[in-house]
Length: 99
Image (cartoon, rainbow, N blue to C red; front, top):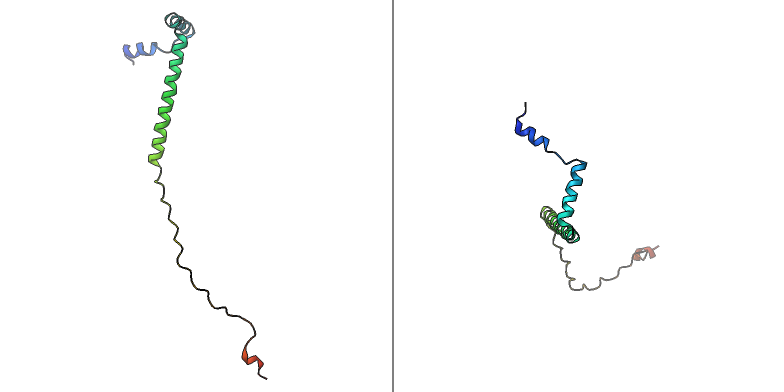
């Protein structure tokens, strides 16, 4: 069982086809000469709204992402080490000459 107030709200739905035509005609009478200016300002307002929404999205993304890691500095090269003595590997064993 619905109340009369809810029935009245349900009765006021979206306008039908004829009602839209009447609304457009009234809108043209009111904004006729200024219609280009009104539409331009409406477009600017929508653009500003989208920019604001995008900046909020970027801020939320920035806040929810982990902080960037600091780069680890590379170790500075140390002093040069002296050259190691060269050791030859082979069959130069002094015992190999013995009979």
